[in-house]
Image 1 (cartoon, rainbow, N blue to C red):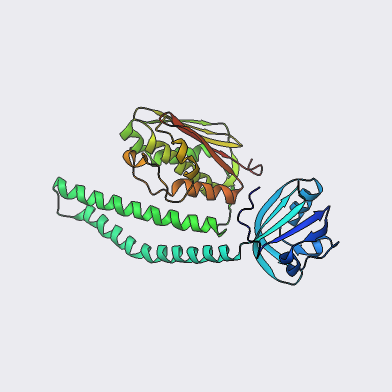
Image 2: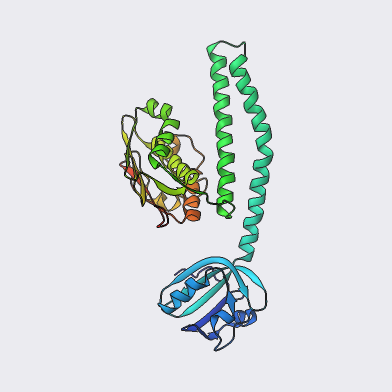
Length: 321
């Protein structure tokens, strides 16, 4: 259990015996903890029943949430219960939350300000493409290149906005029943030109007739995983997309991921040292997949061998059926 982020001058430590407070540090005292008092009389938060269950069953517990104290004070905190030592750690994340909020406001503001001039630019370039008197091949290539660059910028802005919404819980899940095979086919159709250019075949193995989930999230996850597989696959190869009631799997036989770079795969804007040689990208696809999985209660992980290929997995929550 990682406690290295604790600040001994600010964070609380409480020793528990069953559901009763037995000892605490100075910070916990200032928060209102009292000896021999039930934990419910000291603090409250949305998932306190899960903490209660962990204490009763001697299981570890960790969450980030708004914590409410008896004195009507609240703070955003990381709450950790260590079942071996029977210690409850409350780590103040108020400053971290504030900085994230500032960052979120900046990103959303910039995204909003960029969208209008970007839309104008896209419209003007499209007009040039459709109605321009420039018919020579070189001019058409320049117009196409400009349109491609503007589309890439539009995609980056959209991904940043969605990342920020997901990171701060501003995206509301919208469940519906749909056929996942149609979503996969839609994604493959989106990338058909790129698939044809590299002579890559996508093998679809969909074992679930219908699922109940947020269709947009499933689509976005599949779109980014399949896009990455296409980027880093060799020509004349096959990508396998498997979809069951509990698991999404996208497997390629591309360049893979170096061992020393695996830990950074889900970092925003990170791209591997060899990735620039194979394809352009923003480094936002996999971080977006990670955040969408987090807000949906999914788990994402991968297996990869350098120069052999990668397989990305998304384990769907039990609520999806």
